Amino acid sequence: MGNYILLSAKAIGAGLATIALAGVGAGIGIIFGSFCLAFSRNPGSRKEMFGIVVLGFALTEAIGLFALMMAFLLLFT
View 1 (cartoon, one colour):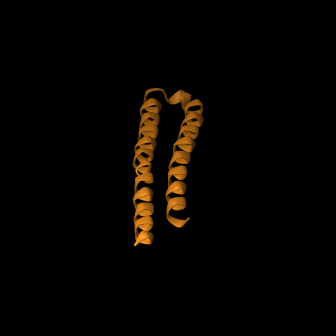
View 2: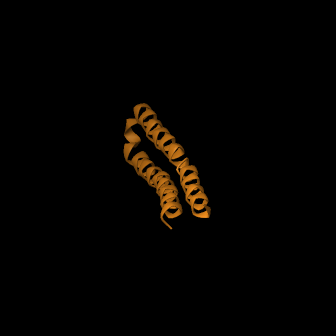
View 3: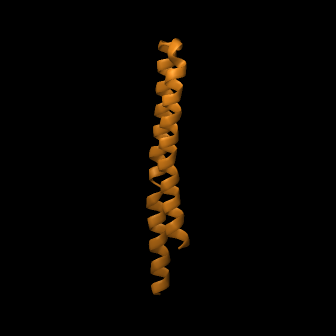
């Protein structure tokens, strides 16, 4: 009986850890949407903006990977 409680607590914790992935998806959409808006207003500064966009994408994606890693750690340890 105690083992089932532990397994269900792990599953609930992993599900809660993956909530961050919704925020990551929204964040990436906001980053690239803002880039498209800024590029359409000022096409000449594409090179400067693109580096910042890639950095923002990488940092946002890293948060998603950390959340996914926490979910897997909760499930499989």
